[in-house]
Length: 163
Image (cartoon, rainbow, N blue to C red; front, side, top):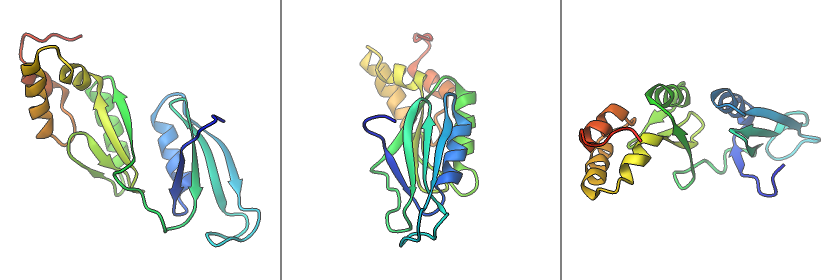
């Protein structure tokens, strides 16, 4: 386990969330499930208390702490995608069964966790050395829900090739 590990608070669904998340990205797996050794305010003895998992090589803990602390937009996880197919696959999987697509590549999964699905191409074009190119790309992105790579490349202009 890392010296610092993000702990995500769930209302009894940590194992379900970790199972979905680890199925989406390479170098991901559930490492350990810890069951409550005794009854506590959030659960009965034997229920899943903690799920330790690795997501794209990073360690996380999912804690089934109860309904007191829902996720907010103050914390999100950003996934850099390589192409439109990966952008669409991850977005679709994360919003399935009750999640929602937000603006500019943001989305909320069914547990309320916030994600940013960001194509690397968007990042490249937003940091273009030509400020007009970066502005056009930014303005196009601000009108999108899910990022459309072809549309941001079109907004960048024909003079901008793939990096």
